[in-house]
Length: 274
Image 1 (tube, rainbow, N blue to C red):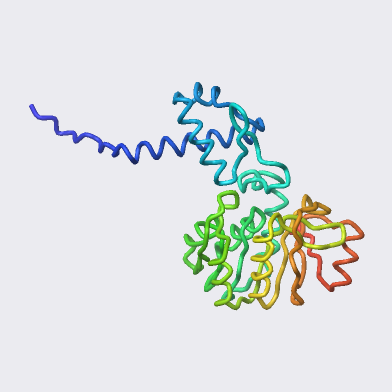
Image 2 (tube, one colour):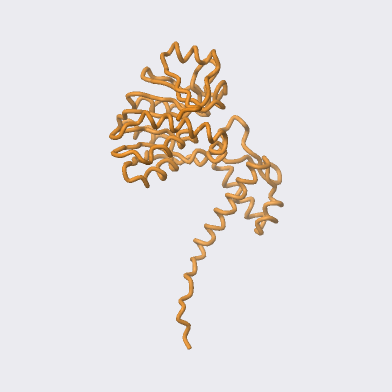
């Protein structure tokens, strides 16, 4: 008698191999975040693949700038490199959520808003899901994916080279695209804020792109949790005259607060807001 139950579809070998490769990469990166280094021998034994396969995975990740190759394995990149988006999301998640909620209260229905990539700006995106007739321009893949599911939000994704560490578009194409837009509000992330109140970033490319983002808006708000205070990253972001304020989760140090006041930037402390 024939079997009436149809057999489950068989995944093509290429698709199956792709899924297995993605799983390996995720495990390697998680192990690297947890311990700071991984060895080819350990990863090979744990994942059940050859050492040559692991070496190829590590080489590919190194070429993407996500780790450094060392003898017998790999290690985290030096600390002057920005942590991965996943690592940043987990750090001070509550503080970033309240910053995002405070920023969302500045957004009115019908606005055009530019949202920079980053873990703090992702908190803002999560608070915008119920807005209507809102246009959001972003270079962030997670922000675009989150808000494109909201019926009242139109999402415009900036193109360019995808930076794996930030899960966002950066580069010449991204900066060229910014010239086509004029936004009501720009919400910017930064790598750090110096003791002198300067906004800083990890690379010249990121700093230049964020400066152009600021130029695209009528008003600019910088979103930064307290871990960015007096945290020096190597490249200064050139400011613009229309920076309206800084949204934070704790009062900034006195010296920094004086600089903000001199620049007439409002300081919105989101901690404890309803």
